[in-house]
Length: 261
Image: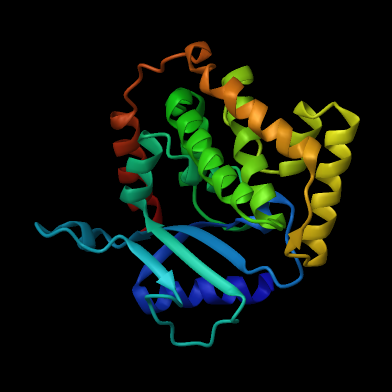
């Protein structure tokens, strides 16, 4: 599939007159719990030619293939690509957007060109806003937990999409850095109780085997509920980042235009 992904990225460059700076896997394949039928959720950052930016009108700054944008070659039905134009990506980076940070730290990078991403990573520790990421993951976990307990038979995917943000928020509270993307690293760091870990590993096994619904995992569900309570009272432990990276990000943008075009 990687060869096909690279071919599609190159065709995007041709069809839309852009340069792709970075492309990675997002979602279950990046987190480490794909099933055989999981989509390839490819996320990418791209830059237009200089002339594109010399306009008084705001232009569309995303590409979504094949959902909203077409391509002149056939795209594998398991492939879902979504890209952000560079200035959009840099604005979101300035806000410490967790989705973008997950892209940057994906363990499955399909393509990287030029120096833009390395420059962004070099200032990530200064840009990282623990509050923004903490509240993002906590809100996600609480919403997914409500959905999880609503069903008589519990969703394997919902177990994992509740566990992952809870563990990510815990990492942020306790380490004040952006958490690893790989789910198993979070489990190894924070889950020490044998019964809970045993259940979580069973959930992972079911997910990779394509099982959709399971019966109750009492220890894991209790852990999720208890950890939500802990996290709701942990925000005072977070440090407040008072740093404006705008000048550096403007320079990254200008340097990229000069380097690429």
